[in-house]
Length: 255
Image (cartoon, rainbow, N blue to C red; front, side, top):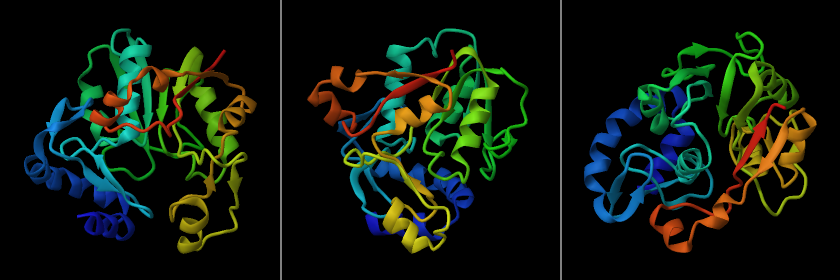
Protein backbone atom coordinates (compact mmCIF):
# COMPACT_ATOMS: atom_id res chain seq x y z
CA UNK A 1 0.00 0.00 0.00
CA UNK A 2 2.74 2.49 0.88
CA UNK A 3 4.44 2.03 -2.51
CA UNK A 4 1.14 2.68 -4.28
CA UNK A 5 0.50 5.85 -2.27
CA UNK A 6 4.05 7.09 -2.79
CA UNK A 7 3.74 6.46 -6.55
CA UNK A 8 0.54 8.48 -6.88
CA UNK A 9 1.88 11.33 -4.72
CA UNK A 10 4.92 11.70 -6.92
CA UNK A 11 3.34 11.15 -10.33
CA UNK A 12 -0.22 12.51 -10.23
CA UNK A 13 -0.72 16.32 -10.05
CA UNK A 14 -2.34 17.48 -6.81
CA UNK A 15 -5.58 18.69 -8.43
CA UNK A 16 -6.19 15.21 -9.85
CA UNK A 17 -5.19 13.50 -6.61
CA UNK A 18 -7.90 15.44 -4.82
CA UNK A 19 -10.60 14.19 -7.19
CA UNK A 20 -9.27 10.61 -7.12
CA UNK A 21 -9.17 10.49 -3.34
CA UNK A 22 -12.95 11.00 -3.07
CA UNK A 23 -13.41 7.65 -4.79
CA UNK A 24 -10.56 5.76 -3.11
CA UNK A 25 -11.60 6.59 0.44
CA UNK A 26 -14.98 4.90 -0.09
CA UNK A 27 -13.10 1.60 -0.16
CA UNK A 28 -10.31 2.30 2.31
CA UNK A 29 -12.68 3.38 5.09
CA UNK A 30 -14.30 -0.07 4.94
CA UNK A 31 -11.06 -2.03 4.53
CA UNK A 32 -9.41 -0.41 7.56
CA UNK A 33 -12.46 -0.51 9.83
CA UNK A 34 -11.64 -1.49 13.43
CA UNK A 35 -11.35 -0.18 16.99
CA UNK A 36 -7.71 0.49 17.87
CA UNK A 37 -7.14 4.02 16.52
CA UNK A 38 -9.38 7.08 16.54
CA UNK A 39 -9.63 10.00 14.12
CA UNK A 40 -10.68 13.11 16.05
CA UNK A 41 -11.81 14.85 12.85
CA UNK A 42 -14.31 12.36 11.41
CA UNK A 43 -14.81 10.61 14.78
CA UNK A 44 -14.36 7.10 13.37
CA UNK A 45 -12.23 4.18 14.53
CA UNK A 46 -9.91 1.91 12.55
CA UNK A 47 -7.73 -1.15 13.08
CA UNK A 48 -4.88 0.94 11.66
CA UNK A 49 -4.37 4.04 9.55
CA UNK A 50 -2.82 4.25 6.10
CA UNK A 51 0.82 5.12 5.28
CA UNK A 52 1.72 8.49 3.79
CA UNK A 53 4.76 10.41 2.56
CA UNK A 54 6.55 11.70 -0.53
CA UNK A 55 10.08 10.70 0.46
CA UNK A 56 10.23 8.83 3.73
CA UNK A 57 6.88 7.09 4.16
CA UNK A 58 5.27 7.37 7.60
CA UNK A 59 3.29 4.34 8.70
CA UNK A 60 -0.15 4.45 10.32
CA UNK A 61 -0.87 8.19 9.86
CA UNK A 62 -3.49 8.80 7.11
CA UNK A 63 -7.15 8.43 8.10
CA UNK A 64 -8.81 5.99 5.66
CA UNK A 65 -12.09 7.90 5.84
CA UNK A 66 -11.48 11.68 5.92
CA UNK A 67 -7.78 11.60 4.92
CA UNK A 68 -6.61 13.56 7.94
CA UNK A 69 -2.93 13.42 8.93
CA UNK A 70 -1.26 14.00 12.29
CA UNK A 71 -1.20 17.78 11.82
CA UNK A 72 -4.90 17.91 10.90
CA UNK A 73 -6.00 15.95 13.95
CA UNK A 74 -3.83 18.15 16.17
CA UNK A 75 -5.27 21.31 14.65
CA UNK A 76 -8.85 20.06 15.08
CA UNK A 77 -8.24 19.35 18.76
CA UNK A 78 -6.49 22.68 19.23
CA UNK A 79 -9.31 24.65 17.64
CA UNK A 80 -11.91 22.85 19.76
CA UNK A 81 -10.11 23.09 23.08
CA UNK A 82 -8.07 26.30 22.87
CA UNK A 83 -10.10 28.68 20.66
CA UNK A 84 -13.66 29.88 20.05
CA UNK A 85 -13.57 28.62 16.45
CA UNK A 86 -16.54 26.27 16.93
CA UNK A 87 -18.69 28.80 18.78
CA UNK A 88 -18.16 32.43 17.77
CA UNK A 89 -19.35 34.08 14.58
CA UNK A 90 -16.17 34.25 12.49
CA UNK A 91 -15.20 35.16 8.96
CA UNK A 92 -12.60 32.58 7.90
CA UNK A 93 -10.20 32.29 4.97
CA UNK A 94 -8.81 28.79 4.44
CA UNK A 95 -5.90 28.56 1.99
CA UNK A 96 -5.41 25.22 0.20
CA UNK A 97 -8.37 23.64 2.05
CA UNK A 98 -7.82 20.10 3.25
CA UNK A 99 -10.57 17.61 2.42
CA UNK A 100 -10.85 16.44 6.00
CA UNK A 101 -11.90 19.96 7.05
CA UNK A 102 -13.72 21.30 4.01
CA UNK A 103 -17.26 19.93 4.35
CA UNK A 104 -17.17 20.07 8.14
CA UNK A 105 -16.23 23.75 8.21
CA UNK A 106 -18.75 24.57 5.48
CA UNK A 107 -21.56 23.08 7.58
CA UNK A 108 -20.69 25.14 10.67
CA UNK A 109 -23.37 27.83 10.99
CA UNK A 110 -21.10 30.17 12.94
CA UNK A 111 -18.53 30.44 10.13
CA UNK A 112 -18.54 32.67 7.07
CA UNK A 113 -16.12 30.36 5.32
CA UNK A 114 -14.10 31.08 2.15
CA UNK A 115 -11.55 28.72 0.62
CA UNK A 116 -8.68 29.88 -1.59
CA UNK A 117 -6.21 28.05 -3.81
CA UNK A 118 -4.44 28.61 -7.11
CA UNK A 119 -5.18 25.14 -8.54
CA UNK A 120 -7.38 23.11 -6.19
CA UNK A 121 -10.71 22.06 -7.77
CA UNK A 122 -12.42 22.25 -4.38
CA UNK A 123 -11.53 25.90 -3.58
CA UNK A 124 -14.10 28.71 -3.79
CA UNK A 125 -11.65 31.33 -5.04
CA UNK A 126 -8.77 30.72 -7.44
CA UNK A 127 -5.99 33.01 -6.24
CA UNK A 128 -2.31 33.18 -5.40
CA UNK A 129 -1.56 33.66 -1.71
CA UNK A 130 1.07 36.20 -2.76
CA UNK A 131 -1.69 38.39 -4.26
CA UNK A 132 -5.02 37.86 -2.54
CA UNK A 133 -8.18 39.41 -4.05
CA UNK A 134 -9.66 40.60 -0.73
CA UNK A 135 -9.93 43.96 0.98
CA UNK A 136 -7.83 44.88 3.99
CA UNK A 137 -8.95 43.42 7.33
CA UNK A 138 -11.59 41.08 5.89
CA UNK A 139 -11.11 37.92 7.99
CA UNK A 140 -11.14 37.04 11.69
CA UNK A 141 -9.20 33.80 11.12
CA UNK A 142 -6.80 32.61 8.44
CA UNK A 143 -5.89 28.92 8.14
CA UNK A 144 -2.94 28.15 5.89
CA UNK A 145 -1.33 24.77 6.46
CA UNK A 146 1.71 23.39 4.64
CA UNK A 147 1.61 26.10 1.98
CA UNK A 148 4.40 28.53 2.87
CA UNK A 149 7.12 26.00 2.03
CA UNK A 150 5.84 26.13 -1.58
CA UNK A 151 5.64 29.88 -2.27
CA UNK A 152 8.49 31.76 -3.94
CA UNK A 153 8.13 34.99 -1.95
CA UNK A 154 7.56 34.15 1.71
CA UNK A 155 7.58 37.79 2.79
CA UNK A 156 4.92 38.70 0.23
CA UNK A 157 2.69 35.78 1.25
CA UNK A 158 2.93 36.71 4.95
CA UNK A 159 2.29 40.36 4.13
CA UNK A 160 -0.88 39.43 2.25
CA UNK A 161 -2.13 37.22 5.09
CA UNK A 162 -1.52 40.03 7.56
CA UNK A 163 -3.23 42.55 5.27
CA UNK A 164 -6.51 40.61 4.96
CA UNK A 165 -6.58 39.65 8.66
CA UNK A 166 -8.59 41.86 10.99
CA UNK A 167 -6.95 43.61 13.90
CA UNK A 168 -7.09 41.14 16.77
CA UNK A 169 -7.59 38.21 14.40
CA UNK A 170 -5.32 35.19 14.26
CA UNK A 171 -3.71 32.90 11.72
CA UNK A 172 -2.86 29.21 11.95
CA UNK A 173 0.17 28.75 9.69
CA UNK A 174 1.44 25.21 10.10
CA UNK A 175 4.53 24.22 8.12
CA UNK A 176 6.83 21.18 8.12
CA UNK A 177 9.72 21.95 10.49
CA UNK A 178 12.99 20.11 10.94
CA UNK A 179 13.39 20.50 14.69
CA UNK A 180 17.11 19.70 14.55
CA UNK A 181 17.63 22.59 12.11
CA UNK A 182 18.30 25.97 13.73
CA UNK A 183 17.79 28.22 10.70
CA UNK A 184 15.36 28.03 7.78
CA UNK A 185 17.08 27.32 4.47
CA UNK A 186 15.82 28.29 1.02
CA UNK A 187 17.29 28.47 -2.48
CA UNK A 188 14.94 29.51 -5.28
CA UNK A 189 17.58 28.75 -7.90
CA UNK A 190 17.15 25.03 -7.26
CA UNK A 191 14.47 23.81 -9.65
CA UNK A 192 15.33 20.15 -10.19
CA UNK A 193 12.60 18.06 -8.48
CA UNK A 194 15.03 15.41 -7.22
CA UNK A 195 17.38 18.01 -5.76
CA UNK A 196 14.46 19.80 -4.11
CA UNK A 197 13.25 16.55 -2.57
CA UNK A 198 16.76 15.87 -1.27
CA UNK A 199 17.25 19.35 0.23
CA UNK A 200 13.72 20.45 1.13
CA UNK A 201 11.90 17.15 1.67
CA UNK A 202 9.55 17.34 -1.31
CA UNK A 203 9.86 17.97 -5.04
CA UNK A 204 7.72 21.14 -5.00
CA UNK A 205 9.16 22.74 -1.84
CA UNK A 206 11.46 25.76 -2.13
CA UNK A 207 12.58 25.93 1.51
CA UNK A 208 12.89 23.87 4.65
CA UNK A 209 11.90 25.54 7.92
CA UNK A 210 13.93 25.34 11.11
CA UNK A 211 13.31 26.22 14.75
CA UNK A 212 13.49 29.91 13.81
CA UNK A 213 10.08 29.68 12.12
CA UNK A 214 8.17 31.64 14.82
CA UNK A 215 10.79 34.39 14.58
CA UNK A 216 10.28 34.65 10.82
CA UNK A 217 6.56 35.19 11.38
CA UNK A 218 7.29 37.72 14.12
CA UNK A 219 9.52 39.69 11.72
CA UNK A 220 6.55 39.85 9.34
CA UNK A 221 4.65 41.84 11.97
CA UNK A 222 2.62 39.16 13.76
CA UNK A 223 2.35 38.55 17.48
CA UNK A 224 3.55 35.02 18.17
CA UNK A 225 1.59 32.89 20.62
CA UNK A 226 3.43 29.62 21.17
CA UNK A 227 1.33 27.03 22.98
CA UNK A 228 2.41 23.98 24.94
CA UNK A 229 -0.84 22.26 23.98
CA UNK A 230 0.92 19.06 22.88
CA UNK A 231 2.49 18.76 26.32
CA UNK A 232 -0.99 18.55 27.86
CA UNK A 233 -1.87 15.43 25.85
CA UNK A 234 -0.81 12.14 27.41
CA UNK A 235 1.09 9.44 25.53
CA UNK A 236 -1.93 7.13 25.34
CA UNK A 237 -3.98 9.75 23.45
CA UNK A 238 -1.00 10.63 21.26
CA UNK A 239 -0.88 7.00 20.12
CA UNK A 240 -4.64 6.36 19.91
CA UNK A 241 -5.26 9.55 17.89
CA UNK A 242 -2.04 9.05 15.88
CA UNK A 243 -0.52 12.44 16.72
CA UNK A 244 3.17 13.30 16.86
CA UNK A 245 5.12 15.40 19.32
CA UNK A 246 7.27 16.72 16.47
CA UNK A 247 4.55 19.19 15.45
CA UNK A 248 4.73 22.82 16.59
CA UNK A 249 1.32 24.32 17.39
CA UNK A 250 1.60 28.10 17.11
CA UNK A 251 -1.01 30.76 16.48
CA UNK A 252 -0.07 34.17 15.09
CA UNK A 253 -2.08 37.26 15.96
CA UNK A 254 -2.47 40.63 14.28
CA UNK A 255 -2.09 43.07 17.14
